[in-house]
Image (cartoon, rainbow over all chains, first blue to last red; front, side, top):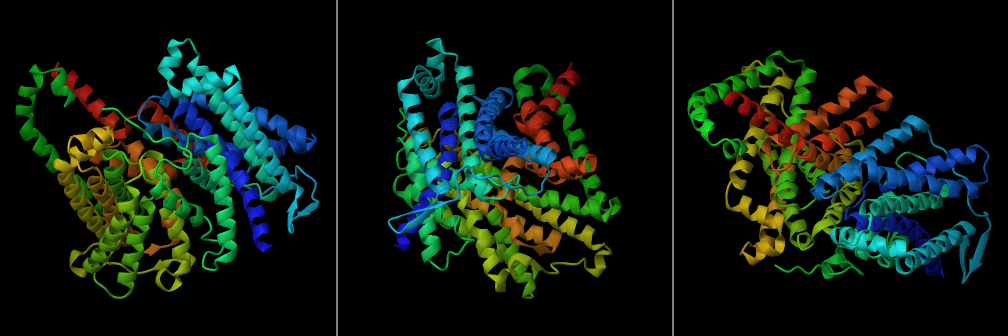
Length: 292
Length: 332
């Protein structure tokens, strides 16, 4: 029964990694970049949410508003900063996202200061039991929101015209341009949606951790591992990988004494290394085939 | 190079006339560099020493990232490994040369062992795997208290200025670090100025194409990773000489990311770029702290964005363009 509890805890933790990993995948699919600032942008969203709650808005309304503001911030970041680096050497673009990370971190310190704050719960604090495992409504809600998000994302990408256009622009920008698609605006939408998802990840994790400018740093490492493990271009892969990482990390951390709390972050990375050595393209990724 | 391509007539005569002048310039610069530590404050000397230390680490990173095109987030682990190895050696009464040998050997062995599996991965997967190095190294350093002093770190007296030099400690350390750094830069320059450099360039541009043309892709990538690790190890030894102290902070992912940022800011595939990047990394936080202590981080980020926006080829690239431009003006 202990094992069931650990798997439940793992899936809860994994769902938060998954939300941020989905954001990374979205950016990768739309611009071919790994956005190192994704976690920091999520932290900005959380702080904005905190301020909205402080003004007396109901928590849920505050979160919805936060997500909309995140969308705008993400879109603006792409248009004003990242656009300049698209189509250049990827290394410069990645470092540009690191610069964005540093700027947003500085911005949080400037606007909200470094002092630790608390974010209210989104769900009731009651505990539910099933199969001998216990979970708070917060845990259940986190998983439910994530599953809902994945379903909506899949429907959006596969069933709507905008989703199709986004996939076209990401897959082959020059062909998309020839088809008359506004590729620039589509990239902007991709970044905006990614920031929204990151904001969601932040709001889901915020009630259970203290608010700090670098609160999302560790989660970003897990999310990066999940996104790469899932194959970087597959949303479903990212979610499955994030859950796998959450479960393996929790189970290993609880049952293997050597690991303890400080080496826990090394567990998903070791898992990632082992799996990638067998499947370099990730669990759900596509193998790159190149014609010379 | 671009100068000769753009204006083929003028530079031939110019360079013939300029050659003795250039040697005079070299001598003047060398004498100036040697004289600086005599007039600078101990604080300035420490800053200069640190620039050289990080310059060596960034130079190694450039071999892997700039030349071979494999983005690495693990360089801080090699820097830390070298520093801890040196701290152990100095702490147990070894001489500086033995300490250097230990630092380099450990860093090299770890680099080869990590590189052999890691280089099979491409692109971002490789970067994320290298991220595991700091993630493992920090808890490990915290736990091996007997070797590393745990989270407190270890302080050792690495070297003090010998009597006969008549130098203060900070001056002696700067000279020592400078000489070793110069040797490393010279070695790496020679290593890249030939078969390996061309092989890495081919791998960077297109791995499949490089393999099809007979470049041993895996072996050369392992070699690049090892050179990066070795430079990291030397830089760690230099760090210990400069600071006389090491703690797990040096192993952290933040530093690995900062070194990558510094590499791009300085300019990839350039020896001068490694030094300029290191200077940016060491000096800009000081300057921004002075301008506005509370906003240091924000100002630092903005400086970074400005450099990337206007000089995507880095500071070295900007300097090269400036030189080309002035040479054109002079030639006319």
